[in-house]
Length: 328
Image 1 (cartoon, rainbow, N blue to C red):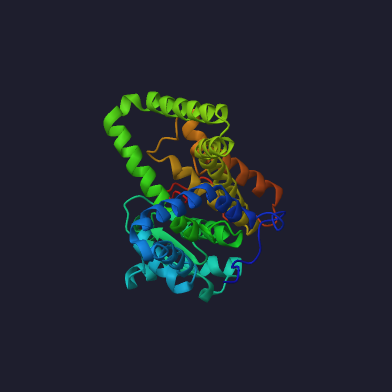
Image 2: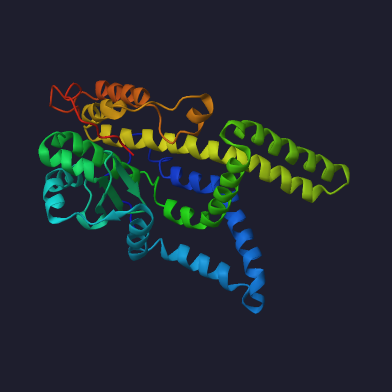
């Protein structure tokens, strides 16, 4: 699929498209783990041992096609086509967002996700979605059109910067590993109790370190190296993925700012803390996929001040009260 959007944010042409690629790289250990799990499961099929990994890879490749993406976002994320009423409510803002970014209507598809929380998403190579709450707020006037335009342009910015393009493929390729880890984590929580999670993590890490030390002491360098790789990947990959995701969010914000919507997007983000609490604790902050609202708003205001010619003409853009349009 060809890239959509008029242009990447200023100064981003050389590195913006790497966000999606870097997220794929951080998921490589989980992909390898998925392949190993499938090979282990397919061993029971005897002569058909290669069928399961082959079907897994084929479905992953299909998810990168236009039809495959439509099926995937509907099945896994609950996206659906807007009803006639929803389409009428979204049409003005959507048309403006496409026009502002120079995006052809055929290059991207707009969906709605049924949810009570206001939010918006970009997925795959051509999918953008808003929640049904956003549609309701837009239809009733609680959500000003120019703020909705800013949120939609931000989501188009994810596509323009290449941040979401490989992620549906990555999600499919890592699914067996994530399911296995979820089952193991759930079982561990049941056995250890919520209050003992930290202690359990320490025990697991200590056990892995002891196994690695024993393997190295016995001269089993390959076994020890694999164990060290698994341990490091389990710790570092989620942290690296979250860091890249936060950078991608800032790049999409800059995309909106470069199209004259910094103040409108900042106004929408002011509602992000409407009854919500920021992630507490240093580990949760490191694993957060989004920068804090304060950081994003400060960057958007700085961008607006640095580009007064392209700043929005609405003088009350940053002070208009919203019911909340959190940005994905």
